[in-house]
Each structure stands twice: as C-alpha cells, then as structure tokens.
Image (cartoon, rainbow, N blue to C red; front, side, top):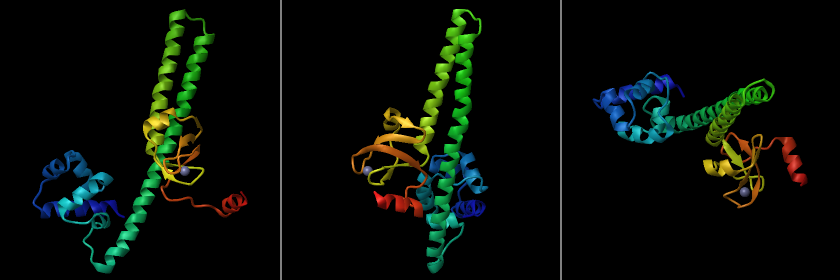
Length: 218
Ligand SMILES: [Zn+2]
C-alpha cells in the first residue's frame, strides 16, 4: 500500500469526474483540507468513508488502496496485499495509542503525587492546600477519562474463557475493575466474567509453542 499513489489516484478519479476538491469534500462531508491531505498522500480516508468515496468515484476499495485500476488476477493478488497492509497499519496505530497512554499517565501520576505531597508538607495556608489537592484530583479525573478513551479505542479485549475478542463500550470499561491492562469484564459471547487481557488484533488467539503446551496441560 502506497499512500502517495492512492492520493494521486484519488485526485485523478476526482478530475475525471470533473469535480473540484471542494465539491468532493462537500459530497463526503469532510473539509477541503481533508481531501487535500488524501490527495497529497498525507493521510488515508477514514475506514467509514472509504466505501462511500469509492462508490462515488466509481472505483473499488481495493483499487483505491492499490492506487490504480485493477483487472482479473491482478485484482485478487492486490486484495490480499492491501488487506494485510491495512491490518498492519491498524495494529501499528493501536500500539501507538497504547504507548501514548503510558506517556500520558506516568508524568500525570508524578505531577499528582508532587501536588499532594506539597500540600501536606509545605507550610501553606489551608485554602492553598485545598486548591493544590483539588487540582490533583481534577488532574486524576481528566487523565483517567483520557486513558480510558484510549484503551477503549485501541485494540480489543480477549475473554479468558472462550477466547472471544471484542471492544467494550466506554461505560462498560468505566465500571470494570482493572489491574494494569487487564480488566474484569463480562464476555458478550459466553457471558462469563473474567480478567480479560488487552490484545492488538481482532483475530483469534495466536499461541506461541510454550503457551500451547501450558494450555493443553489444563
Ligand atoms: Zn467468553
């Protein structure tokens, strides 16, 4: 998958239809800037937009991702390659998101501790102490909400019992106890509550050799 080539292809199809960037943007419900970013290869259209965009331009998603018109045998070969590339891109994004959660929370927790310790130790008037603690609490709230949103958006949870992989709702995540990246959730597939672990892909468990022997012993 070559984003620049896809971009040039979008521009080419758009011009063939006699559309301006502004007109295409309007049709797709995005900004001119978004269309310009697609066409210069800076970004790909969101997954939700790909199908309507392709329909509108009279091409297939496979062709969009390949950046060219495809025929016959060429078509299925490209389809597999594109599917794989898209998946890798999604996995990469999920990893980046989860990493960003760590970068967000680690300094945040340090800042909160510093505020609370300062409020406790420093010789300050009572209102100043209260302000410091209130700021620490607000920081914790904002950080937890952001971290939860990231965890919900990136990757999937895997049921311990049946191996089902799924994305819980924000509220289900909010109320679920957690330990690090593990969360105690009810599986929508088998209905059992278990400590589910975060996984990057939606595909069933891929066990390493040592894990398989561990599991078969149970
Ligand atoms: Zn399950």
